[in-house]
Length: 286
View: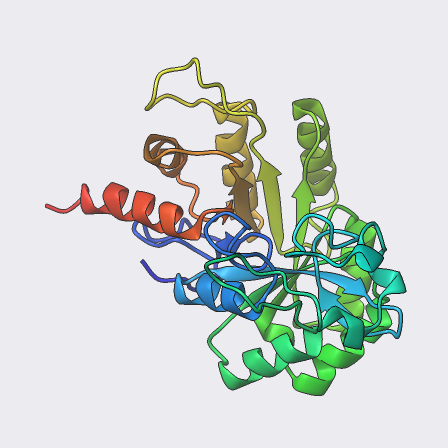
């Protein structure tokens, strides 16, 4: 399996996973600590696109951090930083806070500049930017400074923001993620379709809750299989990449999604995901 660029309005090669995403800084916070240098390397080495959630420190440094504070991921978090928004913490203070695990200590939140420098060193790598608080202009300036626009995908629920970023950085990929209720997801997708996916190169569907009462090997997600298949046909015709986010999965669930023809994913468990794909594609050899 190779992570490759989606460049034509045709079905992907059956054995090829395309531009898949390693959620929350590469490790998802499950297989590895999230949003640190170690986790980004973990996502890249598994062939995925690690996700950086862009937030701004008190002194204006853009950093990759999913939450608005460090309560959830801070290791032995000092009391003065508990409940404190990242916007009230300086870059220097942030570098004193360990976000690793006992098994992987001394991990720290990276700046977007650090991540872009790493991309610059490895032109074949790609990364997701989940937009949070930094200004688009500030982000675009840093992207241009390091010349990494073609290695990035900006993700947001806000389609107008994606279009604005496309104007600032024309070569960047854009992903419209669709969450909420099943109706919300379907309605938003149909708006994208009606607008001919203007300014959007990827669409991500949240598959929502997995029904553990259903048998393994069947479609167990709340978002209907028929809708996922319809969305795939529509996006292929429009030369737009369709991605799905299965919050939970077993190997049989990944197989059920692959059977539809979908080849792009966002996952919290990169190793478990790549193993599941290996089992699926290994079974197709003749």
